[in-house]
Image (cartoon, rainbow, N blue to C red; front, side, top):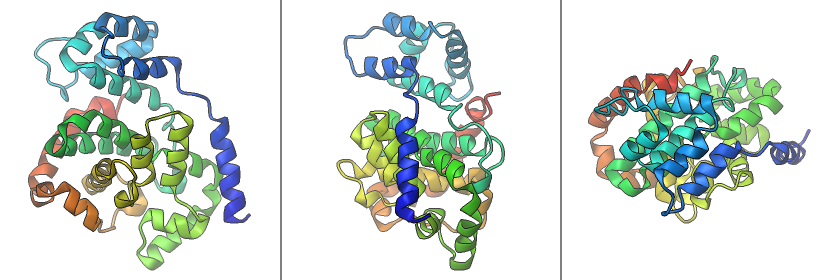
Length: 286
């Protein structure tokens, strides 16, 4: 099968993907409305009892370190804000999308989920240092950056030995090996899925160009933050088995965009590593 035929088949599958759960769609719409109240958000989320329980569990985790126990979605919104609660809903609903093994990519059971949450947290922390107003968007972009791998793993699993061989023989990055073997990489497919789900353009761009941030239109800084968050998460041990011995270097654009953060990387790594330990309920939710 040619690369063109393969991508047509995969994009056809993307088009058949079910829409996002109603509760997530509604919450995303509500967080764009400045007139929405905490009680209105609570009414929507509380219709799903399992989701509500998971959100409250995460709110009360060490990651947020709140001074009191949160017992309702209304309290969660009051203490953490609408955008953070939206991210919690996103985290809980996306877990099923990442469920299962990703053998083609060298991830153990739940490995891609752990990596994705780790990138989300690393991206959020980086963003707070550079552009605080974007930090919740950076979390979402980090969580979704490898969404395309869930589709590629399903459709081209038999060819991942070729990808691994290219990585080893040419010391290539995973996305470079994908492009050589398939004619495209997981980031492009992930952007197509995000677009199918009607995510904002800056999220679609950040997902699609997290390996080439300077190519992202509109808001390349977000793509650069996710790119760096991805490399940090891999360096802290949440990458795939195929990435264990790879030396990852940020692009010239990423270095420029992140500025002093690159110079303070040792202290940032310590901060992010601690945050990941505090976020164990996110990363190991079962």
